[in-house]
Structure formats: structure tokens, C-alpha cells
Image (cartoon, rainbow over all chains, first blue to last red; front, side, top):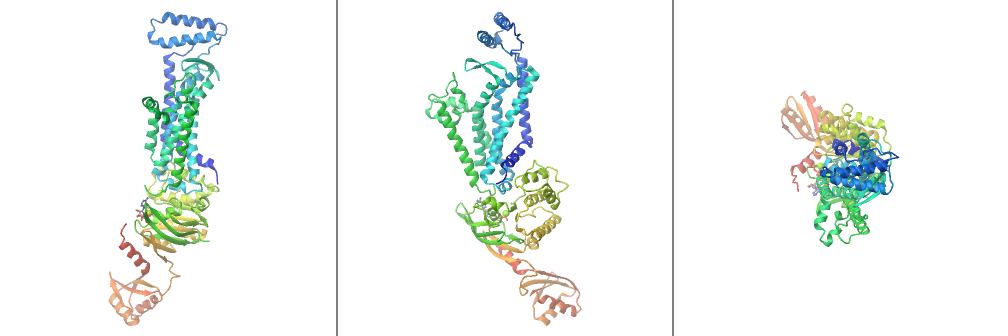
Length: 318
Length: 305
Ligand SMILES: Nc1ncnc2c1ncn2[C@@H]1O[C@H](COP(=O)(O)OP(=O)(O)OP(=O)(O)O)[C@@H](O)[C@H]1O
Ligand SMILES: [Mg+2]
């Protein structure tokens, strides 16, 4: 009937007006600023400004210094060897390196999507259960919308929250990077070490790739929390189950990986990165199409359960 | 067309029938009271009318639309408070109302101000609703229910938590809504005295069944119907004797008041007799014995199943 946009707006209003959400955002802000500090004081970043004419000599000199100091600098040996091999890659491929800056900092901080997943799970786990807890579900359900529509608005609200939060960490990360490390262009090309091999890539592409893989698990876990919230009306249950899976999924996969059936588990399939070139597949016999199928089946089951129970439930006393 | 119509409505939960074959209609402009002891099924019935609880058998129509088959069309005409007045505690009263405004098209800003002043919440409307007292939440609940000018207003114990002045205001407002805007109102309550003042008709529920529906209106009820009349006079015994002599009506004296069971037409005759005897009449009170007795019969033997 009328506007779904207003329903989603209302959901976002309820999320963002609450102090608990502000606390979560404060937490995100702290993590990003702290990462900036760490990166700055660890000082492993490529901070030298290479000149257009002499960058080859400058790189060679850097390698020579690393070689000379290798014995004193045992603690930094790992970093230094990696830097040497990067430098060699630049030289061999005749690519001029850029110094570290905001763009590269954001790409390095792409792990933030896991924290955004955590926050999204917290929101998704509460979004239906809280209405029951507050008793406002009764007032929400006596508006001229079907229950399916009300639930859909809530689901869209959760996904919107994830996207808004991801944008927030990206922009904040860039600003923090700018303050600590300066500007390195809007889309600098850098060497990325992935699964043991080097790749020369734009940071925007690298960031989007990380976010893309991260979103798979974000969406699956948010949908799981949303489903539990809708079926059991219990936010604590929804949030704890999802967070446990989110945090310990890969460990559990490892423990259970000797059993054939474990490849059908949700958390064995959340990391699609395992199928990238050079990646190690968690359980033998798993393939990308297999994982996508398993994830799709879980997704459909979660959605059907959430909508079916919410649509039929008697909203009576507790 | 009735504003609300229940036909053969039943509800069973886990094999137990908690609502049994309800049938009644409420017309536009009518205030219908729903009264019964705890656990009688008032809230459950109201939840079924609002579509919050499924209907096991039968159907409810609101302005001609079935709540089960045409939910959106039917619920569009309904405003309700179900059981406790619930609010979003982290929103102000005004933000709560604006939130509901967004869900139904055509509600103006002026309408919000109108309902706010109607329930007398102007001063507190910009405070967090979480800090409201029960009575204030109740008022906000009523404001929320009226926002979209519903044709049917459903209030589950709306005076719960209100102070006497609040109860009177709400009562007057509900009467005015019914009279001026032709709204059909269903109100549930435990208190006969309170609901009598607001309603045109009262349905008594017990153990999930509607056992009686009574008209309340004083002026149109049958003048031959017996009612209890209590009279405060300076000499009760003399009054009792003279009425007995003049009209062959027996009465008794309770707490210093002379009491008769008579019909409406007899009241002036009795008063005339007392005046002729030069007795001083301080007060004459009538009550609707039929309804009250009926209700207390029901309440008195209430066994929650
Ligand atoms: N979900 C449920 N499961 C089982 N029984 C229920 C359920 N909901 C209500 N009942 C039963 O239905 C009956 C009617 O309850 P309801 O809340 O409608 O009564 P009520 O008239 O509103 O009472 P009160 O005056 O206390 O508000 C009660 O006996 C209650 O135990
Ligand atoms: Mg009740």
C-alpha cells in the first residue's frame, strides 16, 4: 500500500537514535584511531618519498641497508625480508612505488568489515526481539502493512545499517590515514601479498575485494541473527549464537574438518577466499560452486523460517 | 454497515477453547463496553479484532473488510491500545507520534498537535517517553490510536493508571468522538461503574463466552424495568410506612436510606407522597439493578479456569 521507504526510515531511526548504537560507533572510532597509532609508531610502512628520476637507486640502497643491518635487527627480520622482496618485485617489473598514505591505510584496515559484521549481528539480533520486549510490536502490527512487509523493512534496515557503518569506517579510516600518513592519491597502485604471492593492484580494487568477501559472511551471519530474533524473540540468544559462529567458526571448522559431513556446516563455507589462487581449502573436496550452493541453501532456510514464523505468530502476552 | 462485526468467533489455544462463539456488532457512533472478570477473554477478543492473534473459527469484519482476508484495508480503520500502553522509551512523545504518522499516509502535522492537546500532553510531549508516568503513557497511547482518525477505536482498559481528572477527560472525549465523528468504540474494563458512564451498550463476557448484552441508555430503556431507588429522608421509618400505605410497595432501610425496587414511572409518585407527608428529601439515587445484579452474579462466582 503506502511507502516502504518510510518503514525503513523508521527502522533506521530506532537504530540510530539509541545510545547503545552510539556506543558501538564510538568503539569503531576507537579501533580505527588505535590502528592509525599502531601503524604510525610501528613505522614499518614505506614512508620514503621516491623521486621520479632516482627511485631505482633508492630502492637498491634500501635493500643494501636492510642487508647490512640484518644481524642487529633480528626482531624486524620478517618485515625487512618482506620489504626486500617487495622492493625486488618493484625493480624487476619496473614499477615506481608510492609512499604510504590514506588510501593504503584504508585498504590495510579492511579487517574492519569483520567488526562491522559483529555490529550488524548485534543490530539484527535485536531488531525483532526488542519490539516484543518493549511491547511495541502490537502497535507496529496494527498498521496497514502485511507482516511480511514489516519484516522486510526490518531486514532492509539491518542491511542499510551494515552499509552505512561500512561507509563510516571507510571514510573515517581514510581521514585517520590522511592525518597520520598523508595523501597517496585517490587510487594508488601497490603490491599486495596474498596467499604467498605478490600482486600489483589498485588499493580501491583490493579494498572492494576484501569487502566483497567479507560481505558474504556479514550477510549470512546477520540473516542468521535476524532469523533467530524473529523465531525466538530473544536478542541475547540471537546475538550470542551468531557471534560465537563469527568468532570461532574457522577454529570449529578446523577441528571438525576430518569428518566428511563438516563441509556442509555453515561456517566451513563462509570464507570464499579459500578458493582464490594459492588458497588452502578447509575441507578436501570443497569447491566454490559447492560453497555457494551450501550458503544459498542456508540463506533460503533462514529467510523462510524468519518470515514464516513471524507471519503466523499470535502476538499475545509473554 | 456495522463498524465491527464478529460472527461465530472462536479461539482455541493448544486444544483449549478460550473464546467461544462470539457474535456481536458495533455500529458507527456507538460505544460498546466489554466487561468481565480477569481471564474472561476480553484482551484475547480485542487482539483478534486487531489481527494480532489468529481467529480459529469465524470472522471479524471492520467497516466491511475481513481482518483475516483483507488485513490492510480493515486495519486502516482501526486505532487501538492493547493491554498496556507501550511506547518507545528512547523517543520523545512527539517522536513516537511522528513515527506512527510516517506509517499511514495523510496525517498532517496539525493533526499531531490536535491529538496532543486532546490528551493534554502538550507540556511533556518533548520529553523522553521512557520517563513518562503510567498515566502519561496511557495518554500517549490514546493519542497514537487517534492519529489517523480511525472509524473504530479499540481500547483495552484505557483508564488503567489515569487519575480521576484524566478518566473524566477521556470519558468525555470518547463520548464526543462517538457523537461528533461517528466513531465506533470498543472499551474493555473490569469496572461496571466506570464503563456504565461511557457506553451505550455493555457486553458481559465470562469464560470466553458473551453471556449478556445490555443497553445502558437511561432515557430509552424500558420504563417498566425495575431499578433500585435509594432515598435519603429525615425520617426513614415514616417514609417507608407512608409509601407502603399509598402504593402498596415494600421497601427496606439500608444504612439509613430507604430503598425500593420500582420502575421508572413510579419514582415521581413516591416522591410526591413523601413531599405530601412533609418529609425532608435530601437525595434520590437510582441504579440499574438488572445490569448490576447480572454483573455481580458473574463476578461473584468467577472461577478462573
Ligand atoms: N497464549 C495463551 N496460551 C494459553 N492460554 C491463553 C493464552 N492467552 C490467553 N490465554 C487464556 O485465555 C483466557 C483469556 O485471557 P484474556 O487475557 O483475554 O483475559 P482478559 O479478559 O483480558 O483478562 P484481564 O481482565 O485479566 O485482562 C485466560 O484464561 C488465559 O489464560
Ligand atoms: Mg485483559
